[in-house]
Image 1 (cartoon, rainbow, N blue to C red):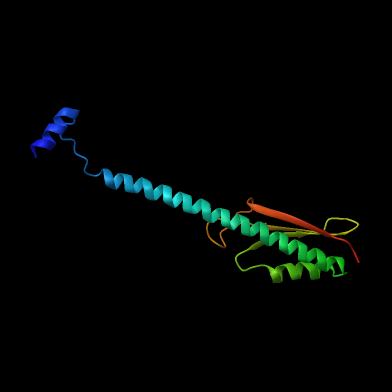
Image 2: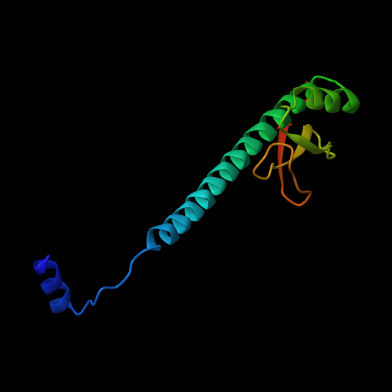
Length: 129
């Protein structure tokens, strides 16, 4: 006990009270951990949305290239759409080849929670047969 008092006296620390500091530090740690988790989940949703929109555009362009109509191709895209994804638009720009653009909304932290301004768009072009 005298050693502890001697160390405190020698270091200039005079009985500071550190109670509550663990609670404050834990709160900050959990905030940062939650924020990092949300960023990682959002990154996964973004990557999955890009991959899904590219696959849908490629499959739609293949169908469009072999002669399927725009309504049939759009219906195919809606049918192949995963349950968590929200389709914004399917476009058929004028082109000599079969070109299809698919635009999906990116989920924000939860599937089904989206925003119109946070979308990903991919296109695919296939030669007409």
